[in-house]
Length: 366
Ligand code: G6P
Image (cartoon, protein in one colour):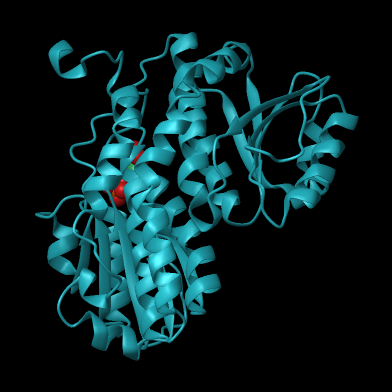
């Protein structure tokens, strides 16, 4: 009810603003990296596996896609990420030394549970879940677990569950790296420091809300939007597009920016807003040339850049700067700005933000 919402207009907004706290809660008590964060026996499991299979649906699938970039880069273990409803119904090649990771806010999603059972029926017994509900079927069914502490999420469009999943998946990345001999003590200390600073860093992204509201006024008048990202921010672009379509009903698609010329560029006109996730990483120069391809067709760029990146506003180029560079954890910050953009666009359009048409919070039937 209204009392619970406090100063916020919708649960979604409240849940977006809870992220500094729930990320802190999710990482509470983590004083060092160790496999046992995921349960007893995790060390032996992590020692035996040589690949990872992630199974999830919806927003949880996108946190899994982000984790693929982390695990392959930091732990050097190959990762497959599969949409649960596809995986369960296709022929795949099982491998017994696989760590099967399910990701689920509710822990009750029918397709994800069925995909887990399918993996097990193929002889893959090493199962781990990243889940927000300790008493759920998913946690009961998996040998290992990390319980995120997002708290109850009411908004159908997932926000705080996603970022807490990412925090847990980063811990998994570091734990796998450690067991694989890929994490020095100095690196561990540095990553832990960055993780502890996340609540403050996220709060500084939330402070951009007034700037994002101004953009949302433009977006509310559009019927289409493109989202671009590269590398580990491509899944963040996917999540940003999903948020926008779910709650504002604007058709949105995400592309890895390098794919622009293989299709989506044909859609770019003055009427097409193009949201670009542009952290200051190794891909920034490539991304800038992708942005020029959009500008050359009259597309309107809305760029989330980092603090001192050399991307400047100008004709058809709008820039909001995130206050800090955040290295590997940057997806956790960039997604918050996209959540706010989707939220305020939906508010400006007057849709039912917390209960978008045709969607359910937890899909427990096929
Ligand atoms: C539904 C929800 C999404 C969620 C997805 C997976 O579609 O509306 O927000 O990402 O299910 O749910 P899970 O509980 O398994 O993360």
